[in-house]
Image (cartoon, rainbow, N blue to C red; front, side):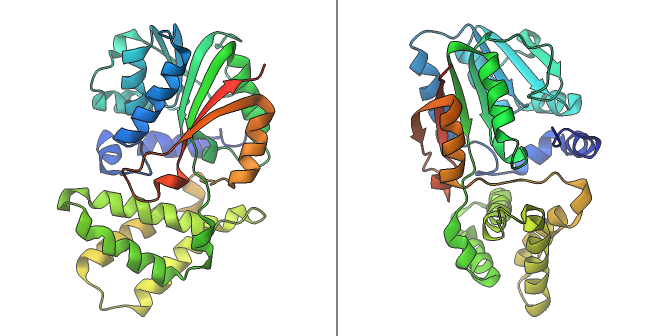
Length: 292
């Protein structure tokens, strides 16, 4: 798949510093309520899963898998990401994890039908449009016939497409008062996510980040007297959008479109919303039972 390429591997290897993950807030990383929703999905099995596969290195999911599963597997093509996120584990024992350094869908080391549960957080927005069905089919292949795929999905907030960049920036930065000073990363990641939604275009997906960069840069130029703290936050976000060829695209999903594709392979048992961070309704945890 095209998301598995040299540029993306380099990006994730460089991004893989535990302090970077600690600075991120929800919706970029799972909240406490999100983790509770993942747990609800796992407990749908009624028994302790024998084998759980985690897509990626998300420490919150690794901790949960360690608490509820007997055998824990991880798959990620960045060895550095798996290693760095290990520093943030609270209960998982890395010695009991089985690591596979490979792409999520193409690994030859995973046996078909061997997992009771597969967990992933925002993994679908790393899959290019048109390749979702290939990815989902491989997930089904790895699950046993009664298995569950539990995944949080970034659904496009279409309302933001009618808002000006100025309105989105001002309304989001105004939320800063509700966060303590050491949680400013939450504002940055929320604003970054909102711009992905504002500039979402199914037909022109390559423009999502470029247009976001233009919007924020124009705001800074037209508002030279904004406060230092606001300018710092915006310049931090700008730096994440500016290196277009060095950062993998993040593709939000249209609700109807992605649910149509999910239904080909899975029965949607539930959609759970965290409600402990802004815009959580656009980041539900889907509990999916294999149809095959």
